[in-house]
Every structure is written in structure tokens, then in C-alpha cells.
Amino acid sequence: TKDMLAYQKTTFNNAPKLYLDRDYFTEGVFPAIESAQDSIHIAMLNFDGGRVGKYAADLLIRKKRTNPAIEIRVIIDNLGSSAILPWSAAQKNIRRMRAEGIEVVLNNFFSDGLEHRKSVIIDSKQAFVSGTCFSDRYFGNKKYWNAYDKTAKEQGLSAAKESAFHPKATRRQNFAITPDMAVPDNADFGASFQGSAVQDIQANYLQSWLLHGRCLNPELNEQQICDKYFPPALPTGTTPVKVNHGVPWGPSEMRQNILAIIEGAQQTLDMEMAYVHVDEFCEALVTAVQRGVKVRLISNSRSGIDAEGKWHLNR
Image (cartoon, rainbow, N blue to C red):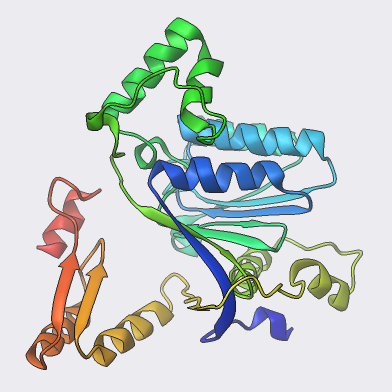
């Protein structure tokens, strides 16, 4: 249907909200999952069996138990989540969710390409998009998790979870966050959206769900599917948003749009880019400087990057 064709479309009635590091989970994603009523759709590069992965699975399981009618669909990448081996911690987490009636698709990197998204869609009305995954290194560093584990041992696991994963308004400080614990190993930001951009993110997700051979409510006709998953967006804001789509090994809308932004810059250009591997991108930045644009680029250092090979490509 036309609702599934979201490419190269800008919508103007969106209300975005930005989060940094742990706040993305504790103030955004986790409370949204707890408040969901109709559906939860998750696509995740890394949904492993660590502390954060187990807590996220616990939330989904508790939601399914309290509301059996809610539809929970999860796409997890097998390589990104270290879930290739059946005895891995991520696979155990997946089996726990499936046993409770949660639908989980394990994306096979070797045949399907990388499932690189980190998106969560709640009730077809709110979407979260970020660079962060349900994995410990996006939530805390070694000292943070040492304090968490010490609290769990001395005060119980519930006390540690209460101090780590609850929103600030209800959080009990069962362990203190010192300055050297403030930033996780993989620092990043995330955003939530309300408005028509949610429909674009939803369409992108459902395309993948169908591509994996899964069905959507066979008892519903096409119009009922559209009404259910693409309800009219409320005029919640005035921010224009364009959602870029991409598929593994396929053409990249993101590359086209980033190049368009660089080429359109006239005075200043501030960019944060984890990996700088594409010559075309570097050449566009140089050309921008040559025409008088002030360019500032933040990328990863050797100690800050998540894979040694990527550093050599950046360098």
C-alpha cells in the first residue's frame, strides 16, 4: 500500500526529543515499553544476554504476561548480538521471550546482511531511533558495572536494577555514580519521535518483518492493517523529519542525503560520524572547506572505536 512507501519523504508535524547515553533507556525506551498498550516493534543490532539485554527481555516478558493481547515483534541480528551459537547468552534470552509468546526473528547476517537498526516503535504512535543497543557497553563502563554487581551482591539484584534502570523520578540511589562512571563505553544519543515520521519508521520495520516471511494479522484486510499500524498522526509538533532507508548490500538513501547536506552548506557544517570510510564523503567535506564553509567533524579515536579494523579505515 502507499503507506509502505516512505522513501524520500519529509513530514512536518513531528515532535522529536533527544536523549544522551543512559537517559535514552531510563527516561525514554524503558518507560515507553512499560506504557505500551497495543504493539511493540523492535529491530536491534545487538540484543544480547548481558545485564541490559536481560532487563529489556524482562520488560517485554512482563508486558506480555500482564497484557497477553499485546503484539510484540522483535528482529535481532545474529552476528551483532553474538547469537550465532545456540548455547550463547543471547540465544537463551531469545528462547525466554519466545516461550512467553513474543515473536522473535533472528536475522542471519550471512544470508540477509546486517540488521543494523536500533529502533523501537510503540503502539504505532511513538518511535525511538538511536545508535545504542540493548547491550551493556551502551549503558555503562567497567567501573559502573562493578558498582552495579557489588550492589547486587550486597543488597540484592532488585536493588541494583532499581538504581540502574528506573527513571530518575522513581530511582533509588543504591549506588553512587562517580565522574569516572558517568559515560558508558559506547557513548551515543537517541531520539524519540511522535508525528508522521513514526509511520515511515513503522513502514520500514514492517517491510523487513514481511521480508523475513512473517505475517501480520491474517484475519485483517488491507484497510484494517493500515488503520491498525498507520493511524492518522496527531499534530504533535512542527519539526520537519526525513527518514532515510537502506538495505544491506543495496543503495543507500543516507549517503545521498548526507552528500546533499554537505553540498548545500554555505557557512557552517558540524558533523558527528562514527566511521569515515567513504572517499566521496571526504572529498565533499574538502570541497565545502574550499568554498568557504567552516567544517567541524567529530569521529572516533583509536581508543574510542569499537573495532580495530575500522580505526585503520578511518585513519
